[in-house]
Image (cartoon, rainbow, N blue to C red; front, top):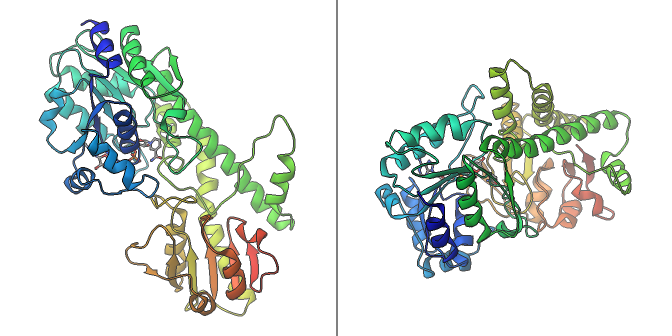
Length: 431
Ligand SMILES: NC(=O)c1ccc[n+]([C@@H]2O[C@H](COP(=O)([O-])OP(=O)(O)OC[C@H]3O[C@@H](n4cnc5c(N)ncnc54)[C@H](O)[C@@H]3O)[C@@H](O)[C@H]2O)c1
């Protein structure tokens, strides 16, 4: 297998790129390759999604219809016909890596996708896993499954790991501007993978092994989870001391070195921070070692949702009301601002807790209008006035917080967005 044959095909932009898993990660990656002159074939088991992609429909709020249409117009497309995998030169796997009901890594999507590749694997192809996972996955899971084809990794096909670091909705860092960490099974694997990413990414960082690249991604997310847990805990302490944590963070952030601000919130959300760290704590057990920081951070971050529900109860109590039968308007279902992703959103857990205690819940989110089982409410003067409490769980930029402050009676603010509203009529409680 000659690395220069595939490398030349890549640099000539003649290589066809296959992406398995056309979701939050796969779609922007596919668009980036297509915009840079490559033909992309996006594979997904979800046939509705495949049809939506092929009709140029907008699937995520932060990826415009223009970009989706451009993907198709450039000659790329999506498919559920996995035997077409043998027609592509490079295969990037972007399938989910969730936790199972025992909070252990659920590798079923990765295993299934890899098995499908192995059934269609051809000599000279480059296979890269992008899904977030524990160190060892590429060598312990991907390589053996692919080699059931009879082909040998590093000899007959190239194999590498390169974690996706996408931050959906972050306008400052598009795919091309986020440096790509790459670990190859062999130096040839690394060179070819590097040649591929260099076509679309400004800066690539080659590391010595797939395990190093796998560990890098986990370290980044553990760093966030632990720091978020620390500010969440400090918030609870400062709350009792009647000190505003956000003011403390802003003041501390004036230090020009040695400090990086993290902000408290209603709990962990999204597809990374509540999940990825536990891939490492699980794997650490195999090496007879504990990941105490990760477990503690998880414990503290999980408690935040209960704390918010408790604060809502206390705030209503201070207004001589009970949670039972109170109308609570939850403002924001997305797990973070300005996106339409509510996976693992703390708002959903808080709603569950409040409903369990008998609250009547409705919600408003400018980007999510079809949440099942929860009543949607416009952010009208009437709806704000009717609510016994408005609970702010997401700090979307396009919400009229002045209006909230003007018409709501009681606002429980987990994101400190009401701090900028001057002279609100509502009673505001930071939580
Ligand atoms: N969402 C993010 O912001 C983000 C950021 C960095 C890394 N990641 C990681 O990237 C990976 C993918 O995450 P995502 O958010 O894009 O997930 P997603 O759920 O948005 O998309 C995954 C897609 O894979 C498809 N799929 C599942 N099994 C398949 C199979 N066997 N063959 C083909 N398609 C299959 C699903 O139908 C879905 O469309 C995960 O490991 C995640 O941790 C996500």
